[in-house]
Amino acid sequence: MAKAQSKITLAAIKKHIFWICVPLALLLSVGITVYSAGNVSKTFTNRKSELEQQKKAVDTLKTDTEHPNQKTIDEIVRLTNELKVYVKDAWTALQREQRERNDWPINLGARFRNNVRGKRPGTGIDWADRLTYREFIETSLPKMEESVRPRHVVFLDENDGSWKPLEPFGPNRKSLATDQSSLVGRGSSMPSAAPKGAMGGYAAPGSELEKPLETKVVGVLDWPQPEIYRMMENWSPTQPPGPKEIWLIQENLWVYRALLSVIVKVNANATGIHNAAVKRIEGLRIGNEASGMIRDMSARTISLGVALGDSSGSSLLDAASSMNEIGAGMLPDDVQAATIRQLRYVDADNVPLTYDAEAPYAQFNRMPVCLQLVVDQTKIPDILIECANCDMPMDILWVRFNPPDAKPFELSNYVNMTASTELGGGSGMGVRPSGGGGGMGGRPPGGGGGGMGVRPLGGGGGGSSPSSYAGSDTDAGGSTYVGGSLGPYGTESVAIEIYGIINIFNSPEFTTDLQLAETSNSGEAIPADPGGEPESPSPAVPEGESP
Image 1 (cartoon, rainbow, N blue to C red):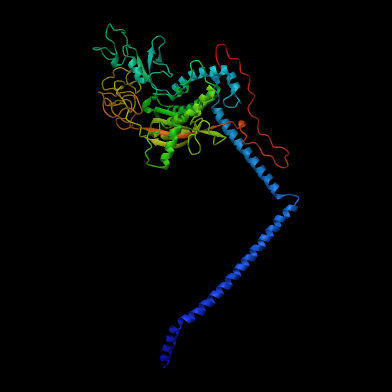
Image 2 (cartoon, rainbow, N blue to C red):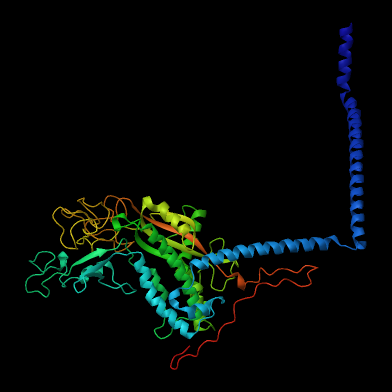
């Protein structure tokens, strides 16, 4: 009976389920609405009270005798002035340290140095100083080249018993291969100089010279095309460089000296090319010669695998595209200075700046540099350390190994040349003893077999040095690469490119960015430091010469 009643109840519920759920849903909705409305009303009341309190606080500022905003402004000004003082102290210290290491050379004389000291860049140089600087550059650049001990031929002067270079250092100095060929017919101890039928190294009886000219190769590295002489390329034979050009050239000189000091230090203990850390200077690119290369390397780091082609000429193309803007209505000195400044510096993103672009930093200019070298790969850490610690420290961005344009070397001009004296063998550059030592590097002294030549020639090594960093693919004996068993500089040698930035600090005396601001209680602003000293009057230009 009970079971039957239960079935009747469930059946009734199923029949009227809709009407049962509707009032329940209605009651639930009403409850939620009432609860939510109460919370919203409470939140609104609280927020309204907060806004009213804030409005009252703002209204009271109209009647305050001491305005809190001015106090805040004064405090901000005070802290800003303190930061400016700290920045100027640090800036001054860094600029002074760099200038102490890279001051105007003493060889320019006291008059020149006094005229430019404390002056704004591009000023303080009169006509007489321009002539002095030209003479200084012409005599100092060969000494800079000689400081890295490039390989060259010397001969024994019988008059005083000293060894003298066959060709003096300078922009017109011949290469090592040309030095070798110039000995032909002069009684050279080289086999190629001996007449037919005579023993190598000695002229035949009755020839022009009975006694051979005793020669040898000295030096520790190859530098086929010294870039330092490019600073003189556009100089007029009758006009010395202008004041603005001189300031920029001197900046170049400081950078070149710093880069060369790196090579001098790492090669300090080298006795020859066989144990030198840097075996070849293929290029020292600075300023606009390196800006395009730095830019392309930045692009490679962003988009790996994109073929950008040869970057060595990018900066030249960029310079040519905007060179038409230089020269219109400008003085000759301004034209030369603008040409040098074109793409000379880069911004924070390593994008080259045009000559008239606003400098991104008042404190310093960012000059890109690139060292293209052939080095002993075991000495690369030492080279990088010296780059960071040189007189103008380099911020190293990338080190590139075996760049794609480092093609095999052309050695065909050197296969007959040896330097057994450098490796402890016989003297001079004549015919080596049977079974003698190696060539001019690549193998330790006393060993037979191939030195720097294309292939072993009898008992000794072959040629001297490669004639081109990007030479032809083959020579007299086949391909020869930088490293490997046939490498002209030895099995441990590798071609590298070191990309970096050198920050060249400006003088803080000529900036208005660090002028201290005025506060409400100071009465007047604290003046900035004065600028440069007043220029001394320039002497009269000699008659017959144009300024």
